[in-house]
Image (cartoon, rainbow, N blue to C red; front, top):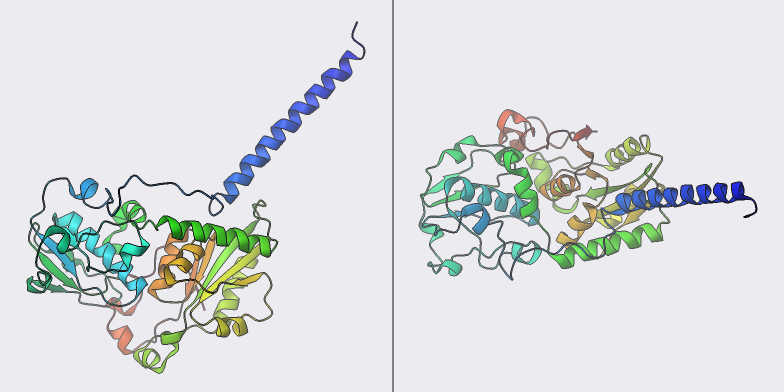
Length: 346
């Protein structure tokens, strides 16, 4: 007869509980880390320079005779808004979306090179089209969506409103897929940051909050006189306090075009890491991996907040009342620009 049968049963039962507990812990750990620790981002089903999201899947395989062009102006954040608007108009009006021949977007996102040369049209074809101008900056202009279908057109503006494409947001998120090398670098950087800062990402009470601090041109007299108000250190500290009061432990990852100012402004704050050395697109990819975001006003920070999809805090007093900026915005407010649900802080 086997000795101590009851003891054996108890040991097997305890071992079973231990295995179940380890499986649950591992499952939670993977779920909590999955946002930025996957070392092998998913591959996409496209050939080189070809994305089925744009022409084949969304516009159909038939040939599109008409084209639509946008006057691209500004830097990366603006270009992203303009491209999304171009995509939307092409989709809604059954037109072929034309991008500049050497657009930086080709090197950042997995988008097809839908250029004039790609469809063998003259390089000046866009300049000869009927032109539609946006009536306000930083506002929604519904008249732009009433242009005739199947007729070539050119649009001029910045199109800085989510209202143009909110109904197609899932498509836009799929469209703005970073190149794999950008994704891989962002994931590796975030892993290194959490390791260096000894930040435990397996604890669900701990969160990462990215901070984008826009200075440079926005802090210049030209922008200030126009009516742009750039936040000072009080705003950033108040925004950080907002998250610290809601979470057990917070790691802040800062990206800025003025890191020296940022270091001085946040001096004394704990658990702060300053990102340096990245290209513009690389910083968007990195900062958007955070759970939540703090942004200064501007299109670059806007995309970080939108891509992160967590709680986003923005500067409440970004526009001086009665200024030229305010008078050039529909309803004299930034409601068309600020994404629904974002939190205003002074």
